[in-house]
Image 1: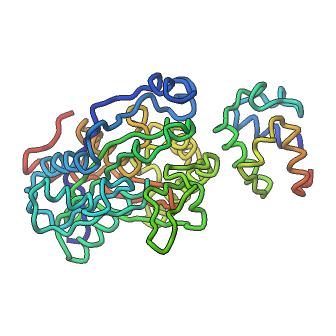
Image 2 (image 1 turned 90 degrees about the vertical axis):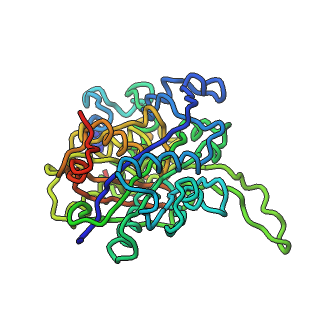
Length: 77
Length: 336
């Protein structure tokens, strides 16, 4: 899952794919603001066919958080 | 006459400008925070100007630009969600200000999609022969609908009005797509003056001001606008490369750039003036259209997409070709 996530995040946030790890924080390490995260959420929803409601976004601060969240939602990876 | 065309535009905004820095003294925010997330630098906020006064000024300018007389108007629609009074309507107040006594006048509320919805209705009424010339004015006093302690919404909006005159024509309006999804209405609400009678207690606890789920609205706009425009162009048999301008509702620069990316169209085709006015709801598209018209940026035959989206949830997009030939005849063509 990490490879695909890196690809999506790199494209959405204009970041270097190699620099993205599970520990990367969207705001601190990748410089994303709330609207960048909205766009990232949309890209993830479309890729993994899940819905990520507004209230869940607050708990997703790192790449690892999102991977765990998607796994809990039943996304295979 | 097979269709309709826009023959004149006008706009009016309040004199008082409120900068991001000034807002930073009202709520906990900053110029850079607002600019980075919205593209907005300042907005015009009414002090004394009513929605109807702004609407009437925009209407006067549009009638003048069209080279018609106010009494030629058979229909006046005011698109607004911030009417000064429920009765009489803004449209009737505009009619009075223009000195017209024969038009059908009513307000239409479809929030930020109101201008597109109103244009649809005016076009349809002209095409069905109910009138031949119509005025559509989008006018808002959004500053009166906002909770000025909510930094998530109060920085986004501004006041203003934009109008256009629509007339029966052989060329112009090509096609339209619009819709709504009331099931998702709770993501953007403005209760206003909630209703009650002597059998019920006044409704309490509910804020009368605007409330917004930013993420849900952002996602709605970024998904719906490109989808709506794609189906519009498909319906019209028009290729994207033939579209000269996309005039999107001026809510947020980040929404517009995300929509442009999804459409695969260059951002240069998406004119922006929200930096100056913020989100003026139903007034945003006609203000932008008027600015472009007055700057001479619209040329005969230009294919233009107008697209609005907003509370309801509602959306609408219209494809038209800009018709300038009548201006050469009446001598009102704008210089570059």
